[in-house]
Amino acid sequence: MEYIFHDTDKELPDTYEYIDRLEDYLGKKIVRTTFGTTFDDLLRKYGGMIPSNHRRWCTRMMKLKPFENYVGDDPCINYVGIRADEPRIGYISHKPNIKAVFPFKEDGIDYEGVQKILRDSGIGMPPYTDWGRTRSGCFFCFYQQKIEWVQLKRKYPHLYEEAKSYEKPNRINGNVFFWCKNEPLEDLERPERMQQIIENWEKAREKQRQSKKDVPLAVILAGMDYEPPSREGCLICQL
Image 1 (cartoon, rainbow, N blue to C red):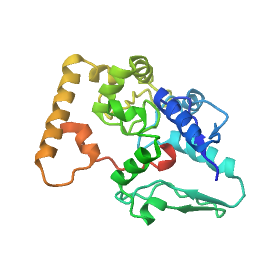
Image 2 (spheres, rainbow, N blue to C red):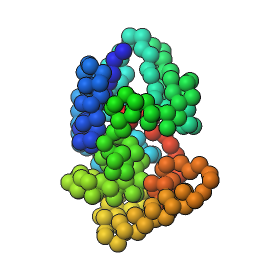
Image 3 (cartoon, one colour):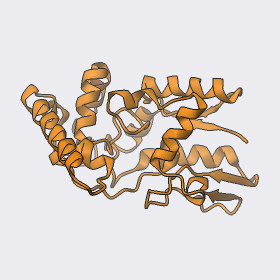
Image 4 (spheres, helix red, strand yellow):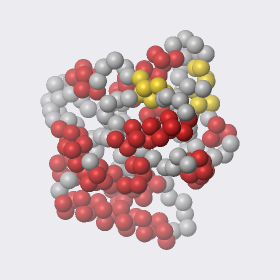
């Protein structure tokens, strides 16, 4: 069994801390690979067009290609951590030597089951879950919800500023693309806007508590601003 982490150099400090914790538990190193170039290098290659759910070159170039390059032509079983309560399939390589299996789905392990495994092992949940983040991807991941941007601003203001610096005209057509759909981070960080997002999030949480229906965690985190995304993200991008 080999454990691999494809480092984009744009990860949260919490992610690196959790990897160190996992290495201590496993008693072996987690291989950290790169594509041989940086996010900023690739951003220049793509004319300054930051990635989005319609332009997911970051996943392809900084996660999938390093994985397949690392595996090469050797036979490989790729254990994919998609849970039993997740409808998506996630990344499956088209290379004939790579076979994807889904142990959580096969064993009926849902989100609560994963939490129990982590608690019982002593590893615990990733530290970023303590401050309201749900994913371990890049700190400017376009899949994160607005409440998560607010929490990033509070927890790591310097990373928020770095993310904001990428929102500028690109070389292809001069358009400005934003991480958070059509809302610039400069507008989102206004105190009154942040307060509105927080209030919407709290209202959604209270509504969920009073409801008997199961509501996706993303809905709770997003508050009233939530629009179901076309969920194309793959688990290779997350721990």
